[in-house]
Amino acid sequence: MAEIKVYYDSVGETLTVWFGDPGQAGVCEEAGDDVVLMKDSSGAVIGFEKLNFTPTEQGKPTIKVETGVS
Image (cartoon, rainbow, N blue to C red; front, side):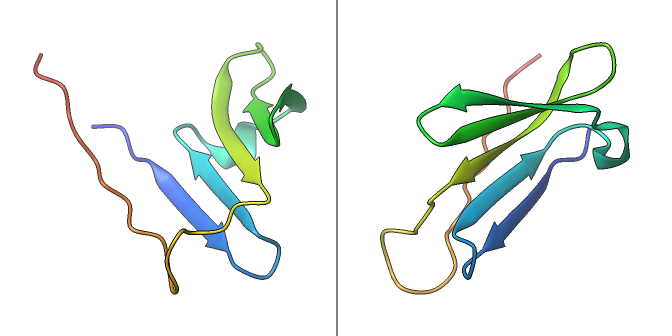
């Protein structure tokens, strides 16, 4: 099963999500709307970062995960 890593930085106001190995990141590309895509050397997206992210409520953001039926 794949592992997803989610990091929230309240000081830098960023939300970073990795669904690939962060050590394989080779290129970062701005996608617009304060979103940066992290790609591996073959160009596959392995994560993204949302800049200027602030949860709507005080404290840490709540992350809900839904899985699809295979």
